[in-house]
Length: 205
Image 1 (spheres, rainbow, N blue to C red):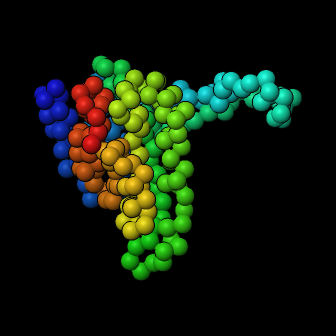
Image 2: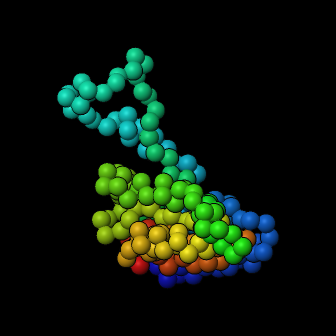
């Protein structure tokens, strides 16, 4: 596995060196480029959960007490921003990329009042954890998702503390991408924390 890590690192270093300092880099474009010729792939808007709520079973009692539209609901689910697959191991990590304003120098605390980071917490719910782990072939010692934060939220003293608290001992499952013109730290984080899960080696720290 060490040779595979080295091969990816060479590709990441080449991509970072060529693109660092330019216009803001897309998460998808960065990983799609470096994954070429490897067992990894990144998918935008994976649709494997598009009907999980449609297929959710309810009791007869529950059904009798809620509104039932004349036209059946045919589409109601969850669409993560991205999925990263290891095609050799059959494992998948689902990715949310959240951009949000934040409280930084020259601003006010209210600048960080957005709730994109809170909405990302849906993946912590027991039901979705179970669904994502099963589909991604991820064991129960790991979270089946990775959240990448962008924008001033990554330097907001309140929001950074909130996020750090939420993830507890699973800090490898989030990343504060403070400089979106340079993917070096993003790639390093993936290599250290997420790639081992996709290889079936260990969990994110």
